[in-house]
Length: 106
Image 1 (tube, helix red, strand yellow):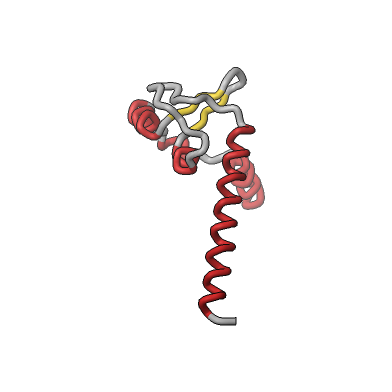
Image 2 (cartoon, rainbow, N blue to C red):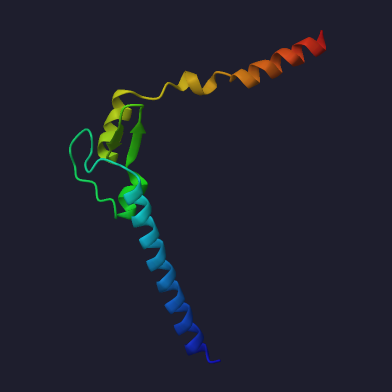
């Protein structure tokens, strides 16, 4: 088989895979109920746009889902910065391991 034919077949298969992936993403996004706009600033959300699907944030509680655009998310993080102390606090599992180690050394 010539190299040109191999490249042509590879291009054709990659185009087909890309098309199938886009269709699958669109169908999965339709199956998930999300608002049509940012819950904060009402910026429209395109459910078929892969970039939007990867960059926007979803906050879900028991009552409803909130869709937040990247600009609003940055603003929220500036207002409510993540507490750095929470990252350094040991988890319950780590506390249990520490107490077990202390008991062994005594």
